[in-house]
Image (cartoon, rainbow, N blue to C red; front, side):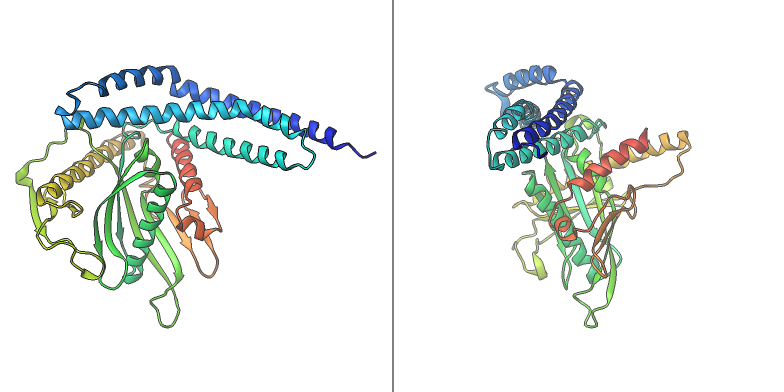
Length: 378
């Protein structure tokens, strides 16, 4: 005997009810971890602080207050928006049950899938509880072994991360880009401004390997090239990174664009070399030498902060007897020929949709990396 459409929809609705109940419970646990009432109270305090008439008399303190307010409000909006969507799901499926053509049911299923994905992404945020995880991130990409191939690969990675940030509406400031002579870039540094930018993107640190048929090889041979990605948290005034001016070498030069094309007629670009550590940072995006030096100094402080964090972590690992080495090296492989595959070498997450990944769709890799890091630390 054939089941009626209404009965089939009823059975399906019961399954949906179970799934909706499950994601509702997951969201409730996330709300408890993030402490929604505390966030709302914090937002009220920050709104009052941001409304003080002389707030911008101290620009650094004002920037810190407004940035924190923006992040807290963003988290609250995300939580309350998801809660509303979860509560509306049973209504959508109830209305879908009365539609004979099934189009409303398809729309309801699409919204359910969307909410499940959004809650999964938010759940990952609860795993970001490191000391600097809620900070903005400074990302540096450098071409490594592979010559012109590596320089082109570094530029492809830069585009991948910029597209990822664009899709998520993250604020990005490109601080410096050094272009290679034939194609691609030698290096680039950019700042990503978003809640938990550092905690999220820090799992991207390491060496990225590309295998493809080289567009620069007249014989169309396969080439392997490498590019390194470094991710550090942006420093805050309270971090107390002291830098002795005597330990810094300052070089100034003219900013340039692709192919050596001049974009500035004065020596406004600044390169800082921290002599004790050998760390070199550059900035050329500001109009004046003074502004570029200040921005470069902030980047240098961030890199020294990350160096200190890594040294502290190394001491902890030594006490724990952790001799596994750095997980950052050779962290991901991108193969474009003879087959298509992107694979994370740490947790074995992979996909055959290489074009989507190179176009910035790396959310699944980032989530897998965060979960892997959490499981490895426990």
